[in-house]
Image (cartoon, rainbow, N blue to C red; front, side, top):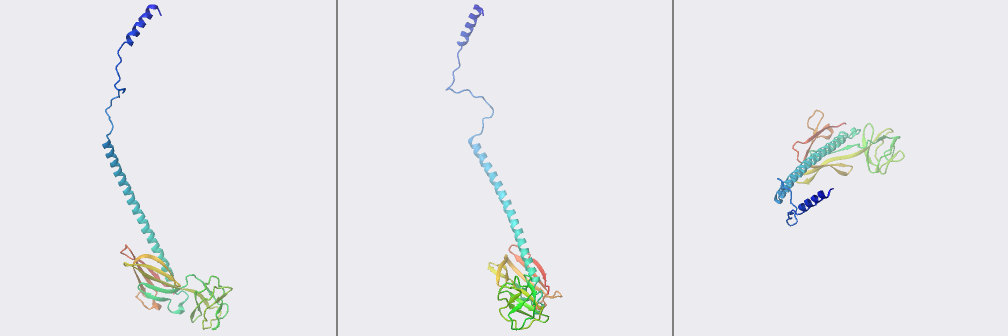
Length: 271
């Protein structure tokens, strides 16, 4: 650079450095301006409150839907349980007296809210392998497995049936009785294990009852919250019948809490 040019550069630099510098106010840098200045605290609180209201309403709606769905499931499950219970009752009632025609009355109790009968629920039956004398307490049979102590049995020939109780579990082709049958039975006579079955209502107060099932003295609940049960009995021609020996059909009407129409089941007796 020539000497004259360098001198001009120095003079311009001194002039630039001598220009005044604008002071900073309290050390704060100037901020860029915008048309959007944000929300106030009150606006934020109102927005949050509105959001909470909407969220609460959504939760309440979902809870209501969930409750309704669970209620429907419970009602459907209860209906299914009731129908299964009635199916069990109908099955056992339909088996009343099978193989025991000679006893004359398989239905022991016939009432509007109670029925009891004899039925071979286990299906156990066998035959004598040799004749039984009137004073004997041991029956010789083809099969004795599964015959439990204390159970009721019937021994039948072509003319009569007599009942007895087992003194012990069946074993080795023998059934031991608590008491003598007091009659002779020929070889080949039928021996059946028979249960005493009873269905009845047990009151729980406030117009509610339970449908109970009792087998050989042991009771269990079949259906809760029953408001009414009516058993109707009919003969072979469809006419009402009260004589147990003449009954061939039983109609069950069961009304539950919260229902107006009863659940109905019609059972034909196989005798």
